[in-house]
Amino acid sequence: MLFQEKKELNISATKLQARFRGKQARIKVQDVSEEKYDAWRKKDALQSLFRLKDRDMDGFLGIQELGTMIRKNIKKNKKNMKGRSSSHNSSGRRSSKDQTKDIVKLVKAMNLTNPNEKDLHKGDGSSNSGVSEETFVQYMLQGLQMTRKTMVQFRRKGYIQSMLADLIESMSNSVSSRILSERSAALNAVFNHFDEDNSGEIDQNEFLGLITYFSGKGAGNFSAIPTSNEIKDLMNSLDQGGDGKLQREEFIAFAMGGLAKTAKERRKYATQSSMHNKLCVLLDRISLGIDRRTKSLHTHFELLVEKNWRENKTRTLDVKCLYHAIFKSNVMGNAPSKEVIKKMKIASKRFIQAISGSGNGSIEKNDFVLFLLSGGSDPAVLKAQHPIVDKWRTNLLKTMPW
Image 1 (cartoon, one colour):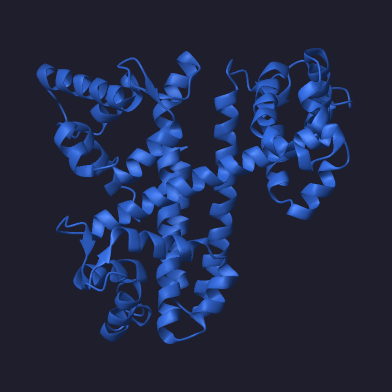
Image 2 (cartoon, one colour):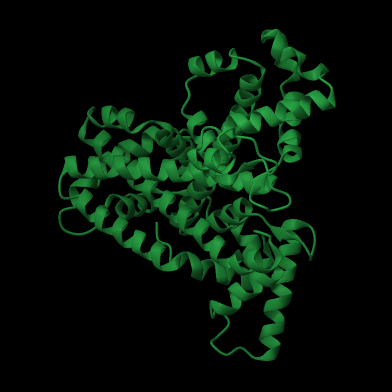
């Protein structure tokens, strides 16, 4: 897995170089990269959501597990029932036995969309095990592509379709929430990285450093970097306070707004002027950079918990996993003494306890990625209270450039 990840990073680096050999080449590579990372984000989010709900970790969402998800959706959407069809409104009055029958039908409906599942269950989609991860993810990915109009039409086909529509909408909201939280954390990390004096503000020189880093360095790339006058104009347009400095909230609002636009919208934006085009390049590079680091962190988490999964059937990072990660990173030396090893174990336990609320607790993948991206709510506090973990995080991120 690690070899494959390195191979992907090398391919990405090659494509990055190709992006600046010409405007059309850059646009084409950027658009392909965005599509690739967008598909990965959605699939990975759905896999994570599936595994959180798969309590017995057998690779299936059974009738009971799916029933719990459906009932939560019914309760959550109860206030909106009045505007829906009568078949949907009746969900709250169905008996437990009828609800179970409905879930069985829902399982069949989902399994019939996967040829592998149809063969496995003799063509009728029935399954005592429930819905596999593969089927669940594929079905939800298709659902996420549905337009609002298509979703309304699908919901009106019947009660089972209405339940499936609720499930798709719930997964869509969860996926969007995770993507936004990770993107926000990554942008905060970008701000912290270029706020060299830790003032909580980015001045013009620091902003120039940010633009130079992301817009490309070396021969052939300087055309993508705005001129000093363009930088001043850009700073003035973003500086809502008028103090000549970029506040964290201003930077996040600018970047989140730009990255929320589609590639087509950004291309149109880029045609307005030379500065707009260079700003589009900057947003493209930031987008690709944070996507690349985020994916690397997801992959690293899977590597860290792989042994835990084999031995304990859990995909969370506990004290033992974190200690081994710190030990193998050599942040405390190649051959640490018994005293240093003890400090690493204590540091691991204190950190897990601070995050999870228990020394015997663990960290889910999404929480792990958010922490690694941002360093917590205040990186200075992390450095002061958990110096060993902070050193491990800092060294790890050096292997995952933007």
